[in-house]
Image 1 (cartoon, rainbow, N blue to C red):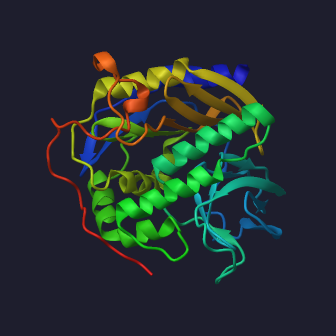
Image 2: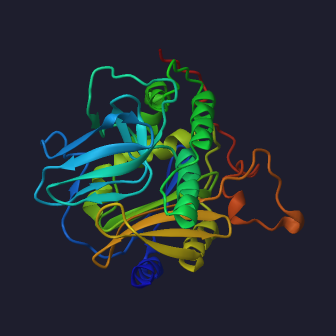
Length: 345
């Protein structure tokens, strides 16, 4: 319970700042939180010879092995793509791998039509973060599995369906069905959004990403330097879900409601895969996952529940969190962002 209260306290303290627009993407800066003990980010660790990520034995889809050679913990973030080995994966939950240790880490496949080594037998983190639509499905199913069975399994078929949707909506082909190819095929368009987004503000520890003016994702970290390091990969992930959307001003009330819903939502605490405590969040149309360690929220990832395609507003005009990913309002500006096709492979 203590770690749940830590998370609720941080959510109460976090303050949204002035939104900025980057093409069809709205970005609301968040400040606040508490700095935890030092760690090394997985993004930088392999190149420094401090982290090795490989298949378990001959390979199994939902598990990889992380070996930390550093004298400090290494942080792998929920939503990071682990590229290489027999197929591309995404990390199911945030994991702090203890110093000088080896750990099995739970992952999901985001490349369904490859099961072979290509060039590397170890994975590396240099791809954009997985898009919010894919992450939301994964986080919801992993949280449900953890609560029901104590396992961090995802609904792999829903994730593959989400990857296929992202490739189709980006108008990108991929022989192996790799989500990574959507980013490669639309690299020019995504780079324009990332450039327009600029850099995080001084002291910024998190962000609420919006499409059509409404939230699609929240990412919060314990320190500004972590956000600054992963910022370009985060924004590329958000931008993939924004392609084709209308540019629209951010709905501040929706953002504040999303934050309040997270603070009030149901929360359960579980021993983390590595260091710390994992807190699973759920509520009225939202899902989230946090890693709490030594009194700090090292990472919180949260999403509105994804509505069915073509979903109408409930009777009476009430808008719930499930509607936050609905198509933009007709009142939004009518310029759609970069609908042209790009193909790879």
